[in-house]
Image (cartoon, helix red, strand yellow):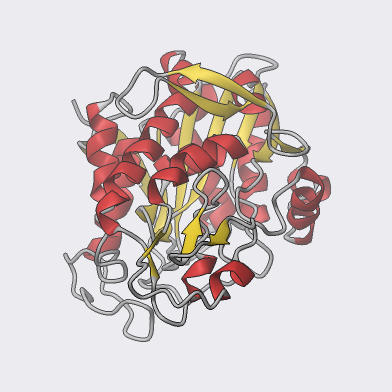
Length: 369
C-alpha cells in the first residue's frame, strides 16, 4: 500500500505563499496536528550544522514547526546529538554554542535546545532491533524518552550513503557517539602496505591518534578509528576506502534508523518534514557548503521515512543538474544526481533495505498542497 507524501513548492505571489505559511499548511495537511497528546514531550530533531556550514534548515522555518507543535498541545524541544568526529559539536557545550551561533536559540525558536545524548555523547539507551547487523542499537536517551518526535531534514548528498535524507537523519542523528562508531566501523579506511613509505603524514593528520607505525608500515587501530578520512591525506595514496564495504555501512545505518523510531512509529508518534533546497553534495557535518547540484524544489512531509526519501530522491533526479557544481555527470532529467557525485555509492540501498526491515514502503502518492 502506498504512503501519502505531501508536497509544496517554493512558488509565491502573495503573503500566504511565504515559506513559513507553506510549512504550517503542510503540517496540517499531513495530519501532524492530530498526532500529539496534551503535554507530549516532543523532540524536534534536526541538524544544527557544523561551523562554517550554512546549508542547515533556517531557524525561521524550524520556528514555524515548533509553533505548530505547541498549538497542537505538545511541549517541543529542538535537539540533535554529539558527533563522533572531532569538531565543534563533539560535546554538548560546544554543540549548543554552535547551535546558538547558527541562530538556534530560544528567542528564535520559542523552545529549548537540548543535546539528546548528554554532555559527552554517552547518555544512551539500548533499543532491541534483532536485525542482520545489530541485535540492539544505542540511541540517545532523550530521543528514546521523548513521547513524540518531529524529524526535520535537509536533503543533500553524502559520500558514504549517496544521499542524506530522513533515514540518515534518524540513524546518525539519533545515535549516541558509540552508536555512531558502530555504524562507521563498517567503513573504516584501510592501508595498502605496498604503497606505504612510513612517512607518518597519516599519523599527524589523525585526530584520534588511531594510527601506529609498525615495521610493515602504518596500521589503523580499528577500536578507536573515527572513520573521518583525515588520514587519506597520504601522499602515496596508500590509505583508501574499500567501497565494497559501503553496503554494510548503509545497512547498519538503516537498522539504526529503525531502532530510533521503532516504538514511536508503532504508537503513531513520529512524523517527518524534509526540505529539498540548497541540495549540496556533502553532509551538513562538513565545515563548508558547496554549491547546490540542482535548483530548489520544495518541502515534503509524511509519516513514512522510506516513502519520503524515495519521493525526495525522485524529485531531485527529475531536475536538471547544475553545470557549475560538483556534479561530474548525470546532469540530465531522470539521471541519478547522487551517482553523478559519488559514483561508487548507490543511495537507493537505504530505501530498499529500509523497506525490507519494515521501516516504510518505497511506494508513495505525492499530494500537492
